[in-house]
Image: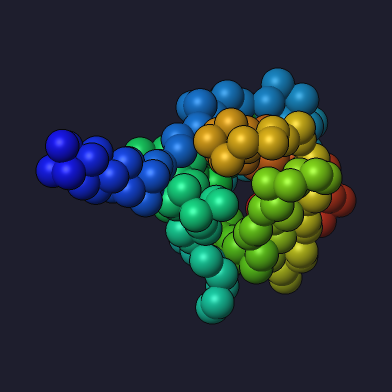
Length: 183
């Protein structure tokens, strides 16, 4: 009987102390962002390619959520890779993306953190530049609903990353300096 109780206790401890990883839903391009890109650049006939989008020194790309484990926004991708793929998707849908373009936009993610307690939010900052212009900075503080239990709250964090990136990219393409990236 003592062995059964001991084994049950061991299994319970292993179950409680295990980590969970949360994954978000795939990125969906923002129609509003695509239209803004078209209005800013497509009329000029210029094309864009993306260079590196990388984290600044000290930016954590594997944030932990409530001791459940790291928040993964897409399997096998870092947060910066997710942002780059999202930006590339929007440029492509706006029909201004060309892998061979002489206009190369790069970015440095200067801040990326979240809160899973109320008011829950993603805070993302980015410095955008190109080989044709000076850099400019944008940021977003995207709020979302949270939950009391850790699993649901951390899943909400992962699910809110895509809309937070949409909002960040809105700041990038809505800024008047976005047009100067291709000139």
